[in-house]
Length: 306
Ligand SMILES: Nc1ncnc2c1ncn2[C@@H]1O[C@H](COP(=O)(O)OP(=O)(O)OP(=O)(O)O)[C@@H](O)[C@H]1O
Image (cartoon, rainbow, N blue to C red):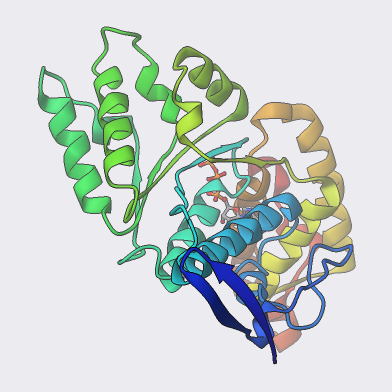
């Protein structure tokens, strides 16, 4: 353990640097060398394939928060980090799943008092008559206090332009995100093109969100990795033939559906459907082994219908 003297506004004080304060070096794969102060983040996010930049941003947020707290303890100026975020990404790129994880992480870090997660869409926030929208939005915010409010397809709030009640929902959210930023995190999420348009039409909104996270489409290797992880979690395995068939199918599907391809959600649907087909196939057999129960074969992948 090392100690170091730092001067604050009131004079000189001794800061004892704990083991965790030792500078760490990032390795090429985005993880950290010895004395990794981010081990809990690495472990919380270990099940997410890819997302290298995103994991890096989350570590930056964490480091900033810890240092702000240390600065506050030393009577140095420190700002409480505003944590509201914008998530941009195509379908199935993990926006909702990451937001849920962040709620837990912020709770563990003492940044949120409850760490729960409330998901809302336009119908939960926007009313049908004057006065109802502000009331509905406030009531959702109230429910989300101490946790994260995640508004999916946020641009649908601006759908009807200036005269639409959605505008009132946006104004109410903005007011509360400024007033309550100490124990409330707002995440607005949606598809990249629509989110960018939404932000252009609502200037002033972007600057209130210190973090904008881009969720990239998964490449073919990542999709296959996600698929293997999903079957492994369910205690199944692909045969070599099944994996080969799946890889070819995903390559084609990605090409054909382009921006509408629903990434990891599509993979999950394929797997869940395959498990059902596997069950039906085995039901028709007289005897089967443990291996039969585990192995998903090419026959079980009904890829066109996934
Ligand atoms: N990087 C990843 N690694 C493993 N599984 C993932 C990853 N990203 C997403 N998934 C899985 O894919 C599924 C869909 O993810 P999620 O619902 O979070 O996507 P989304 O971006 O919110 O989609 P949408 O915008 O369409 O609502 C979930 O089962 C999630 O666990």
